[in-house]
Length: 126
Image 1 (tube, rainbow, N blue to C red):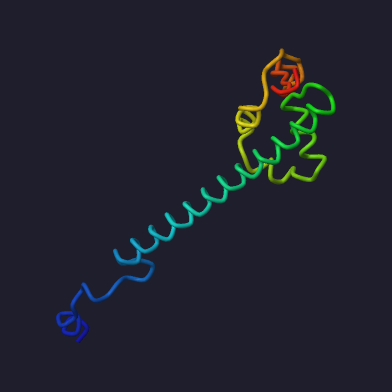
Image 2: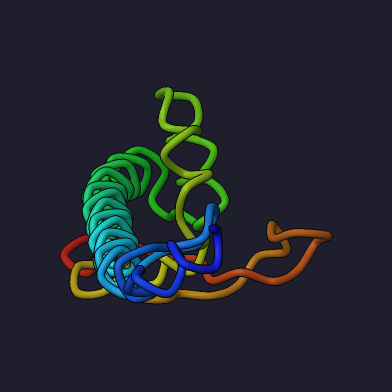
């Protein structure tokens, strides 16, 4: 009896439990791609926001102290409560912070493990 029923069933109409149709897999892949793109956009937005905040902090510190370093900017941003945002982005974001309005005037051993980092001043200051 079972063999008779199976002979009349179209195997393309049924799926085994736990399997997915090609259409479901494609939909899942498209959804994952959309989620990945959204996450990337959020990171880009967070990075752009952080660069603007860091540039403002760097300008403030340079006006107050005459010079500024990236570790000083990071410390200031953390003091202002932006630590969680800092933790979401690559630290290399500090490069764009000093482009344009700053000039390198030397180096200081303020980096991780005493590594040398650039010392910057405002271009219109010196």
